[in-house]
Length: 57
Image (tube, rainbow, N blue to C red; front, side, top):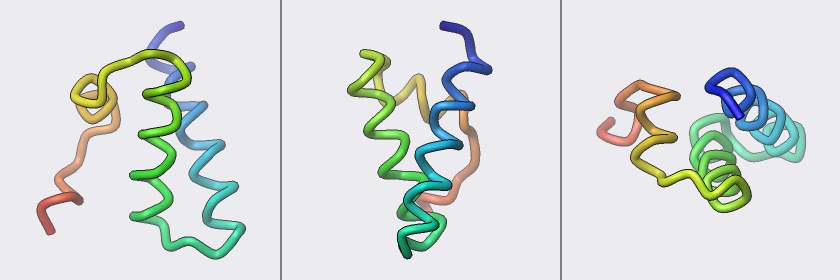
């Protein structure tokens, strides 16, 4: 699995969560956690791939 597959998986999960009514920031965080557990990728690595400082704001 490469970086683009990880980003695609996160994006698809985030979009599903947003469509269910979750706000985008919370949906992204939840999608990252799910993908991290599903594909056994540590969260710091997921956060590096996704980037951004949205957790600090």
